Length: 148
Image (cartoon, rainbow, N blue to C red):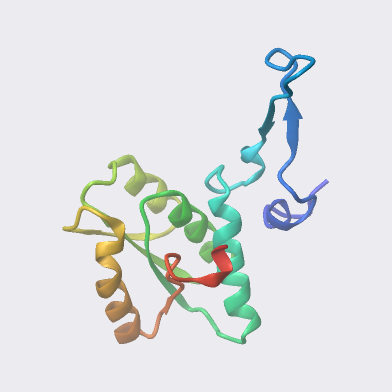
């Protein structure tokens, strides 16, 4: 039993593996990871987001607002985690990201900012500037050591 969705991110690691008997033979064993144990985006990005946030909180940083550039999974995880920790999430997504992502992020309580760029990393300067101006935390998943 898990006390909260957060426990799915750090308890019972690593992500459970299941042997696929139908694809395994005497010489080859095929295993799959049960990524749906990651409760927010159903991907390993949940854990990366949690680590970045946890490391920031451990340093004593109070997070009232969290700004991040994302293309989907990390943003989904950060939106859910921000809600759990009582912070506002503003997520910047590129013009090329599918529109369904806006709906999912907003359903998790995030503010979505569409930026006129093709690649998520092209929005980093804007995110950093906006975060600095507004006193928000920018975890910067692309340069954050906690994601590795």
